[in-house]
Length: 409
Image (cartoon, rainbow, N blue to C red; front, side, top):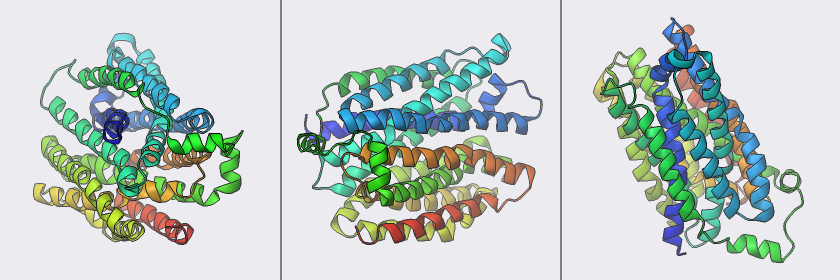
């Protein structure tokens, strides 16, 4: 299988997963009314954000299971199983009866399906990046950017689906993206069966360079990689889910923008982000990807409060401007982060170490970001809170990556 075909097949699964994840987040208000019986809409939204967080709590479990499998037995098998699990859980949400039909059982089943999705993503996201970077050594940053590109494209697709659904008052239409994602995921699984094992893994296996317990080996030999991965995960979790996902909520609830205008603004931001990621990755391959990454983190630290102030402005043009700034800054970091962090790991610890460190940080920060922002804005009235939260995440990442990786990139 040629490298271009491998990129498409591997990245497509990531795209589908993030499209579904993003669609769920954007439809939080609507889904809260379907699966919970709460008169207070803010409290209902906090509950559905809690369901969103439940999937993140399960990601470390997926990272342990699939990461161990990927570092011990090869990259291919966990990539197929994780996508199959995601397809089954997504289909389950698509056919799930609402609260009006079966009462609280629907809430419980929704949580279970979301937890299964979290396990699947814990084994898919970093595994796809490991596979692609081991396939292509000539363009390391471009290879490492494809999963970020796919995730961003998936977010754009999820945003578009949520926008389309919001234009129609139909009790069934919200199910279509879930069901469609499940069907396409099955097709992607079929295509992934032809993926070949990477040369890096095969050589490590031949040279007896694999480990009985990859995670323990990562802790012993790759602490820098674990720290670097955790820092990037903190930044991406807070920056993306505040600067894009919660941006929509803030634009509507605080700025008073119509839902369709807020959806249009964030769709523009995601689209720009998606386009720029491979562009900046190609630039990183020709120059210094490390400096490009640090520049993105630095300006994210400075400009995040400005971005979120535009969400609250109530002016459509300003809301679009905020998303343009967001898209550029996220692309600078997303185009370079994975190549930088994976360089800190040995072949035999790369899948499990990066997956677990990423998943734990994401479970803590990504899974709670929407709830924290809702608490800051909806309950405490701190409109500057989300922007400052983004800046803090950028500072943490900038200091960690700047210190840990300065000698190795």
